[in-house]
Length: 276
Length: 244
Picture 1 (tube, each protein chain N blue to C red):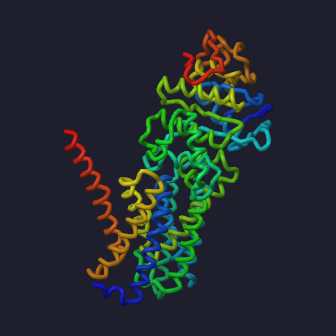
Picture 2 (picture 1 turned 90 degrees about the horizontal axis):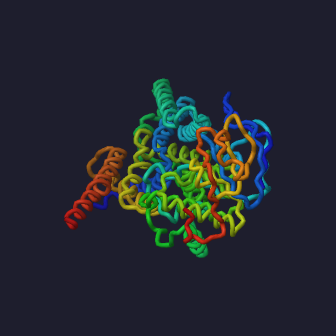
Picture 3 (picture 1 turned 30 degrees about the vertical axis):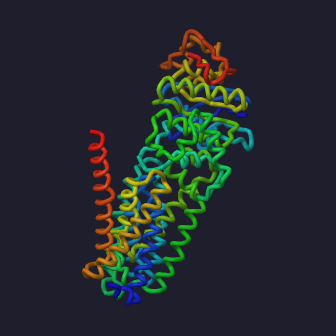
């Protein structure tokens, strides 16, 4: 049963996966509460274009992915602040454009030894030590920023008019928040894959809504659920020999069905029985 | 405290506000009335510095602290957030670490609007419309404001609660000399409580009028019914002595 801990690459995958689960759950709460869940998918697809460009130019795909993702977040903010086009429409514009570019670049560099599929579907088990360190440093930076500016970000996502009325340089916070999400999404590509990264940011958060009565409680619950989902997924993929990303997302879905559907339904049913 | 000279705002080719001139002194309670699209909310945003005038100028006392209650503030989603967390947005604290003196200040402000500390742990979306508005007003008070700006804050609130909250604001204005600018569609409620009225109308801007001046003059603000008679409410009363 414990043979999973005998392999260095699996221990590394468990550590990186757990840390990724913590950071994405914390940031995911701010993202979902601000009704920008679709932005995570948009950033994932545009950073895939960056990854494709990196592979094509023989530069670090992760690095170019992060840069393109940050660029897309700034573009989204600038276009969105003109209030002429709804934000979700801009997201779809960037998402489809990013994916089309990514596929083109992947096709042009199909003879390159670096596999584009690693970033498309994720490859947690093949993460190297240097990639793990990069994720740890940037992930920790994002967590520190979130906790240091917690009250500002809370105000920004729940009441943007009040936020703008209070702070003269509110625009920098608005861009900074999107840039943080951009970096996190681009970093997570290799762990879970561009097509599934949204699951880590969104599923635990919506599951947590059934248990939490405050934003803090929602953050703690979603961290717990995300870590359970990721660890469960890695164990499941190891013993059942199935793709890790797929196992992680399906584990998160199972947790959603239990805590997000069955438990609330059971509670309502019991209440009705007690009062009838 | 606030002074505007020939101020206007133009979005592309449309004038939202044009040639507005008025002055507001410290401790005044100004009612702002006008039809839909007259630029009432834009005027508050100009005062807050969120929108810049495209013509003329607006000057606000340097370093003035604002308290702002936006229009129809009810979170659009049902995301879990507690009353305490909504209130904390009004604090100067930046980080997530709470300190011990905060809860006393939060309690003090929430009691001013007629609620108490037992509400802190409740999910905000479980409160009634009136309770939500009270929490949002308490949050504005947490900034210890010199100028309070209300953008139709009591829409969707029941009649009795409205009267109570109007009285709360009148008391804050009287006791703390807080300048209040109150945007409302309900002219009668505003007229009866404020010192002067600013009628916003795209074609007619004559600054702030004393109450007696506007009574019965429907031409000042077409589409907004202005009462024929005044029943002024004296500000020096306690919360229990409801006016209507």
